[in-house]
Amino acid sequence: MSLTENKNKQAAPSEQGVAQTGVSKRGPDEIAQDIAHAILARQLPPGIWLREEALGRMYGVSRTKIRAALLILARDNLVETVPDKGTFVSRPSIREAHEVFAARRLLESEIVRLFVASATEREFAQLEAQIHHERAALGKSVPENIREETLGDFHIKLADLSGNKVLARFVRELVARSSLIAMRFQSSNESSCSSDEHAAFLAICRQGKVQEAVDCMLEHLNRIESSLSLEETPPAPESDLFRALLR
Image (cartoon, rainbow, N blue to C red; front, side, top):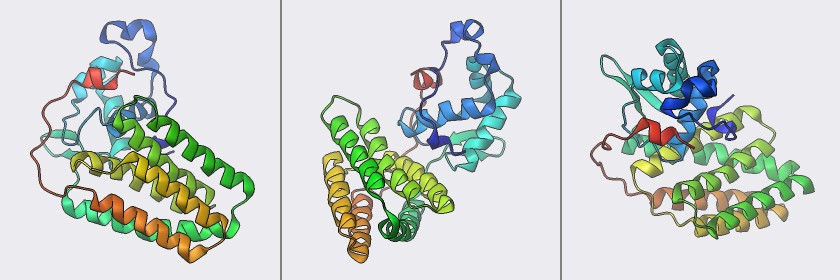
């Protein structure tokens, strides 16, 4: 199961309360989900070193379990391991940013075709509920990273409703990588604009206009990519792992 599928996780422990909370019983999957959430919520910036010893101490588990968790994260391209140096939150390059959005355009075009061809009223209602959730988040004093994560959920939900589980899994990974890219290159994307575009896209889908819906999605993805400031920047400063993993 992809790390981005489960957001309703237990809170990460305090360093003093590890023994009392029973966190040592956590397996690699749960630890990986904690770290993935912190990455996607922009609490652990690209390039930060994920120290095995510190993570093991925090969770009260062996470094073997931590390494297994980091391997899960590497599978989803959220972290990268550098020989003789350690494991770091992935720091996408400009080339990778372009490649991720190129891949999204290909995959999400097909997902739109599949969705429009078979969508039921119930499925339209699910996407409308997601848009309502987006707009509710816009009206609250929530961090921008949470808003961006909510906007990405629309694309994940659409992929899930397409009926093609393989495509949906790839889109889920690409949306997660897009979040890293937006964090790395300081996206200027306006959340309210994206939500309005989601609503306009869904209205076209309801009319059964397949190619127009595909074109609308492509324009949406192009605008998101063009909002990125694609310039190389220095690595992020050291961050507090413990604070970042607190919920």
